[in-house]
Image 1 (tube, rainbow, N blue to C red):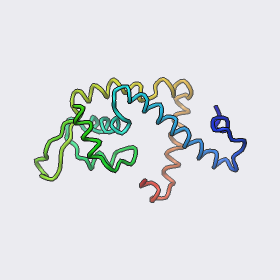
Image 2: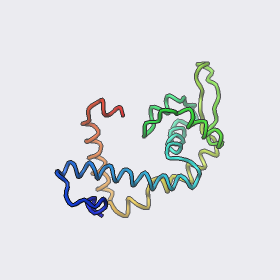
Image 3: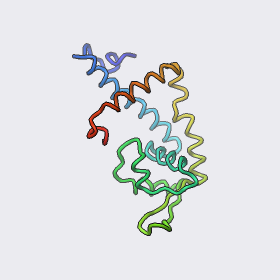
Image 4: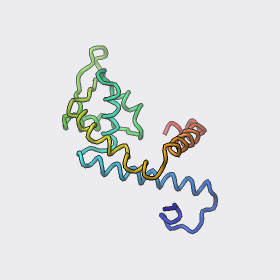
Amino acid sequence: MKIDEAIQVNKFSTEWQRATVNLLYTSNWVTAVLEKRAEQKQITLRQFNVLRILRGQFPNPVTNNLIKSRMLTNTPDISRLIDRLVIKGLVDRCKSNEDKRAVNLLITDAGLNVLEELEQDMLLNDILPNHLSESECIQLNELLDKFRGSLDPEVKAI
């Protein structure tokens, strides 16, 4: 479905405006699909992102600051997000031996299992391949990387 039909607009003033609205609409659509899938395991997309970061560093412990720096979305209260994962038994928290102020985080076996169960659904393996070829995905990635790479540094920080 074209963006014009999806949001019932007769005409955009420019193709740049159309592309911007299309990016926003598509991003929200993908986010909604992923949120619904994450809810099946009683976690949020941000929690899913934290688990992926922790798994990527496993078996090395990680600090809140490292997680915050690698999140896909701006997450101001990373401590509360981690608290929820600890309560669910998906993450372990312990004091750092090197820095008494820091807390080390490790993904648990339960966290690894939840992540593994969710990953196939979360990667949209049933959506992207049905609509885009691999070469189209490569092209899309190149265009998105080019677009983000050309942004003002102030905008990139968001």
